Amino acid sequence: MPPLPLPSCARHGRLISRLLLWRWQSSKAPGPQVTQRETHGGVVTLSYDLFEGTASEETPLVLLHGLFGSKSNFQSIARALVRKTGRKVLTLDARNHGNSPHTNIITYPAMSADVKHVLEHLHIPSCVLIGHSMGGKTAMTLALQEPQLVERLVSVDISPVPTSPQSGFPQYIAAMQSLQLVEKVPRSTARRLADEQLSATVKEESVRQFLLTNLVQENEHFKWRVNLDAISHHLHDLLDFPEFNKPYPGPTLFLGGAKSPYISSENYPEIERLFPFSNVEYIQGAGHWVHAEQTRDFLSAICNFLQEP
Image 1 (cartoon, rainbow, N blue to C red):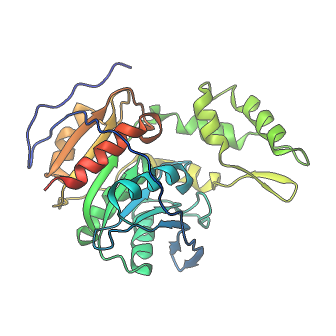
Image 2: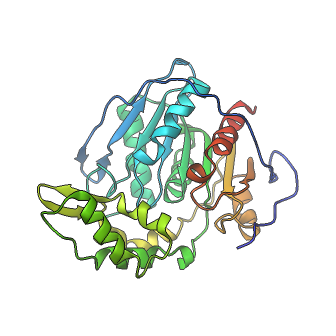
């Protein structure tokens, strides 16, 4: 699919589009600290990694992954952001993903409540919320519901509108559910056999490798660590977006991949309605997984956004 057209330049209430390029300089940063896992009623206490920074007075960054992802997707990004900004960085596993508990419900109001619960648990009164895809919709939901908790917002390659099933996720779920998982074999063998089965439906090798990050071994058995049943049951909710009337008043960045269809010109009116102080930017050469495909440009865009007034 050709790159999407870019919006005309404007600021404070209008959308702008630009490509930001910085040089990513390498240095060392501390690793993650603590992980939590328990449930409190309808709210899930999410598994998280906390990367401490040196700029304790600066607002922390919170990273939310997409569907079938996990906090490990952002581990190198988190460390790089600590190095470049000095800020504390928090990465979370969404409910039914990674090391977070499973639950029958997976909707954006529920997931935003989970994020709020973690912020309260860690005594974080306000954060810069950065979410990719499903995580972006979770981030937007929290910002629209609880704007005082979100100083700035970044939605990575997703808009506040229903997502078309062209995403391929219905096919991915069906392929994963139908997989015949073997037992008592080396992990490498189990992954190879699973990859062969998935290839009949999921043609892109990079997508299969991403999905296979969720194949885990428990004793001598292999299983999916994501809750496929709950995700399948609530896929419509995940592709949809809740209705809101009151806009989020904070600075917002919509950061899309130039080769991805998920932030298009058709979405600009709704983006501007709900996020009037927003910019739209595209990273050249990136598809849906912007942070993984063009990491340096992604980091540069985030750092530039943090420095804007």
